[in-house]
Image (cartoon, rainbow, N blue to C red):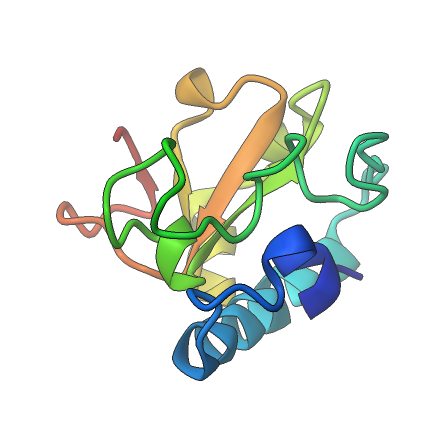
Length: 132
């Protein structure tokens, strides 16, 4: 299970980690944790974060000053997470039907090698699996 502490990491008390963004993150984590509970494969722990959150610093919440992503991106609004998926097994298991069942969207696996980007914010295309 991914906790709010896992998601926000060192940014938990940052001024950009507003109550609204924490509300978004709770909604995101409810859906992601439900999906991961049903996932039949191995959930890998990222040695850099000690959780399923990918990356070293910016796989969960990103403050507005983060050089990764656009201003008010899904990560910066508490609406997206990168799940550590070193072999792509989670991405191989996911289908658009599964994403729809959990109210999630993902960035196309061709753009997320070793992680799976999941979001509760629909892309402009409205597609469950999208290219950035």
